[in-house]
Image (cartoon, rainbow, N blue to C red; front, top):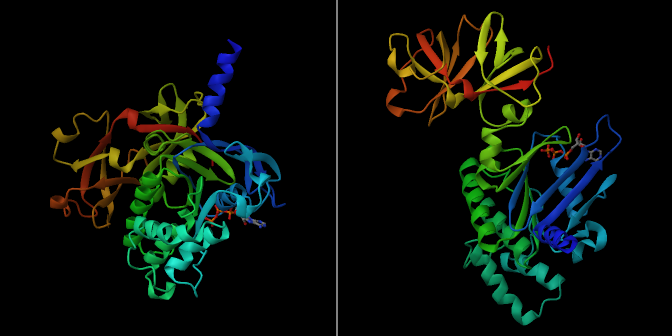
Amino acid sequence: MSSMHRQTKSDADDRIAVSARDVTMDFGADLPAVDNASFDVEKGTFLTILGPSGSGKTTLLRMIAGFQPPTSGVITIGGKPVDAAPPHRRSVGMVFQKLALFPHMTAAENVAFPLKMRRTDPSLIPDKVEQFLSLVKLDGYGERSPHELSGGQQQRVAIARALVFEPDLLLLDEPLAALDRKLREEMQLEFRRIQKELGVTTINVTHDQREALVVSDDIIVMNNGVIQQQSKPVGLYRSPNNLFVASFIGISTFIDGVASADGLKVGNQELPGRHAPDITAGASVRGAIRAEQIRLVGSESGAALADCEIQLAGSVEDVIFEGERLIYVVVSTALPGVKFQIFHHDPHEFDLFEPGVEVRFGWNAKDMKIFQHAAQ
Ligand SMILES: Nc1ncnc2c1ncn2[C@@H]1O[C@H](COP(=O)(O)OP(=O)(O)OP(=O)(O)O)[C@@H](O)[C@H]1O
């Protein structure tokens, strides 16, 4: 019995590439930069650490890289403490926003550099370099200097350089932040393709929620140095743990009130919704409804809202054109002060409602998530 138990445990340990236990980094400011972080990263997965500026993402990544010892707690890579080996011996590849290529070396020499540092047999180096330039779709670019490459191509060389020695772990600190949006989105898919092709465990840091949702198998959301939630992208989007995660990811309308038995009360209005687990009746709460969960119709049209459990009349206050979608900002005298944000994706109906037009809108009770909220 006990040997079976040990077996199960070691099987689980074998699947973990990186593990953090109670990791804190305190620079002596009011709040620690990273506060008691514990998490596991499974082998072969792409984990993103997502959070606003100053939330502690880079500090956490630097501790994983072994650049900075934690004030307390333990980080292990492949079951061994991070500081068990000197930095150049660790099997960790890194791509940072500011980690430039060596300017006086060609692309191929840049990619060859980590192999030379690791005393790889010189006769094997050219093939390896070619293989990894090809992986990042830069066949034929090896002889170019960095200044002869575009920003996106330079980042590809940096990726090839980080991966050429086949590390156990790849660390990415906002490597795409300086690129324009279109290229950034292309490169996000490239990162995903390369990571899946090589199966290298990857930890990525970003403040871009779209990037996190697109590239990751698993996401950790941080705020004020504290891990708010670790989930797969779909779980994170659909079931945020708390108000911070609900407001950081996606676009939502928020309604403040007092918790009732199965929803929230605003004045005399009772709005049914889904309580977060820690809510007790009478607590100050905030309901959140995603912009895509609210349906909007003209004030004359009755049928389209028939299946919405909550239905309100209102008027359009503003229309925001974002190219592929519109956001209608709608107000209702039934809930003063609340600005409903409602997506509209149909390109044939883009001029449906002008500001000032009377509308009706509604949503289903299950789509309003209700969170604990300190009263203002
Ligand atoms: N070496 C340092 N000494 C003192 N304070 C630091 C140091 N490095 C970071 N901090 C502080 O720790 C907190 C977290 O910083 P960190 O760079 O980890 O955040 P971040 O989430 O990566 O932010 P950004 O997205 O802006 O890079 C910030 O308040 C920052 O000022």
